[in-house]
Image 1: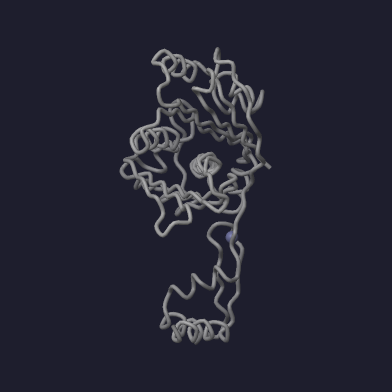
Image 2: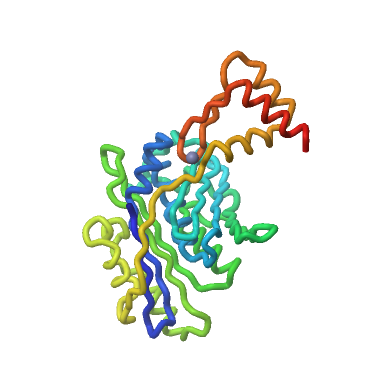
Length: 293
Ligand SMILES: [Zn+2]
């Protein structure tokens, strides 16, 4: 399990949400057989989605992050429920790149910078609320911060980190989103920027001292006060019914073709890797169902 801690500071002019959830990144790694760089890329995206999901108001609301940067990793997608439970996938999970000169995993290189970050919030209305920004670095955190500033006009700093061990397993993973309330004094903006610049490496803090230390460092000198804590995990909502709906979207002709094969269609959930078997009879029934509409 992971955890999201929400806190405020500077007399409620600053709010922060911190996530620490190595289990989420590790689960993603195991489901998708992610390379080390892909573990960091999808891991950061999942953690960012979780933080955004946790901000949603309605219980059934969801948020989807999609990074399409044209890099060798392909598209990276993460979906969160309103508590911050997440699931995700990327097009090329095994793609990897050499580490950068500074020793860090080259997430920006794997995702690419030639494209967009799209944030889609499904608030139960007819259409989802969709916002999109050009990728800044493809490192995920910078791109999310740009999204908040450009698309929502909220002063925001974002940090996301996944520490992968030499055995390829996730050692630490977490992040934060810190936002200034409208009308926050300029002096506070400067102090926050300084704190974020001066803080220790995020994954080091999480690995050695935990999430509360992130709050102490980012809101240094701002008398932070913790509001609440929420458990979050990697969670898929797939079901036979949902997969069947997906099959039906292929159309009658494709369903009949699949039914004509002498073995059942095997459909794998792209979020959790669970296999669903659909025998010919059931595929024909799905096609019949479409025909009656
Ligand atoms: Zn699933």
